[in-house]
Length: 301
Image 1 (cartoon, rainbow, N blue to C red):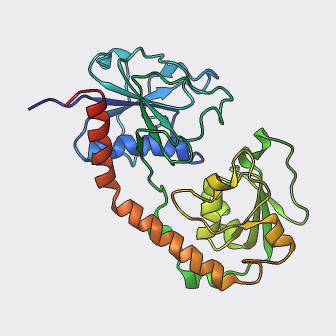
Image 2: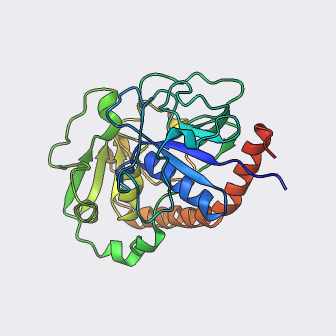
């Protein structure tokens, strides 16, 4: 029987506020869960080039609820046999491995401003097909804990006297302002405060059209209003793996769509949640298909 390679995943330290980082850690956990040896290689957050790595100390930078062993010394990696997965924010091949996979957790160059140049030998993964349409495999998992999603009746009973503005990544692409009469929403809040704000608000105006905040808002019964689609196009925003009910600014100004039709919004919210549950249920099957595809690409099976 052929021994499968160890899979190493380069990632920033765990960050609850980053869906991309959470996905990298979760992928490592998932691989170990199905019996494929996998470890994290922690990137040094002090290095803006994203080409340096650190040794974990006392599990700092890890999520203790996940099975994610981290590399302490880089010579643990068999550079000719093992597989290294880089997120799209890493340029080149700083670890000098032979079998390199690139995981596009956003569109190429959107985060760093420096697009990655792919090699013919790279195996290309995309978190959402809109990030890298020509990827060899699309590996998407909705990170939400469905056990903590409020019921439809629970969100209907929330008193919604507030509205919010979220800037997020929007500031990278132009000037953003807080909408008058709204509270600013950012990550400098506890998770409880964050959820309470969403549950107390009818609308969240967002300058960041593709963000976990949009999904979280819908889950908590708060209608997202997209102030811009930049840097995306409408085909990308509206063709994500999960259909998320949103309004445009025109919908809001002209009192269209969900402005007065909250029950219709909740119907679409229920359909979104059902889609999440179905994708999570099929995750192990997708994971096995991904492994087969990647290992065949590198001729490791």
